[in-house]
Length: 490
Image (cartoon, rainbow, N blue to C red):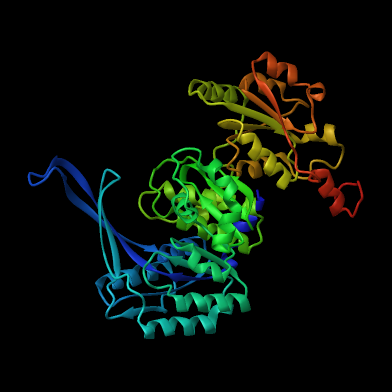
């Protein structure tokens, strides 16, 4: 199958990316512990493994490269052994590090984590966070002025390491005005980049509440942030603000308007180190390749989920992301499997939402509808008409996309937990098996026109009619493709 997800992923290699920012050497000391130290109430860890990876903006560069983009990296380090390790790692990753400048007065930033049974027991840091010397700063400015237009994506990673000085940010702002590119920023000080007018910024929740001077909430964070799109736009100057919420997924604002929410995929593993770097690199690639916001966000959410399922700072690779969208684990093949799944969810106290439809050519109206349905409960199950069922309901020439492709596209949406197909014109036997707490249907239905209404209520469920996005339908899209004709696409 070749879905919209795969079509974008397969073009990642076309992108030419310049990453500029701080470079960090992350050191992981791993071992076991069976006793406490007699000197202090701390565990004694017998180190059995020592590993090195790059962090900061360098990790963003590694993420772009793992997704097969063409990457150059612009930064500065010290003239020391730690810098030599960084050069070696980047060389093995195939990243051009020709323009990582070395300063004798700078000490390379190193963050060392002591780990036992996958848990971080301690972290100790050293390194220089002073601004660049004038000579190095001028070298970076000269490189930018000579090569800015050669790249499709400019990625600024600012971790208070002194690389992105005011002079360099001013240069970036001038160049972005003259040669607009996809310009993405990951920084703890997003207001410093406002003059650049970035395409994309990615604050996490903690950074966003600090930026907006709000109180930190443990729950209901998405609801809290929903109304602050205008302020985020005003403070960052970014066209797109991707607000990441860890386990609560991500919220996307476009010029201050809330556009989309993705939901975190729950994969094995609990390490969140580097997840934001994976998210912003993948989202930037999607936007460069003109994926719409929902599609680009789902790609980024999936890539981040893959990254956090691994221990340490490890990127999502191109093959992994491609495989993720080959149905993942969402397709339910039989009604008995659906029944067992829903019994488990019921025992866990989760609210089950069920909806159904053809979903022939997935469009923004579908995505909005499914996101709203998801918000009604904890688990969203989608029943999808098979090809023969659509043919009976819609006529010859439909569906445009066969069942297998339609399932794979829906399975890529993080709002959807499970997809199951049905051959009948109505999914009544799926409703009997799922016994949903909520049955969601579009606002163009009513109880009187909904044949499943009585069954849902007899089973103790509630029917919720979800408002539809005006002027968005598959039929309308087909008519536009055919220049107004109601005939099938030729």
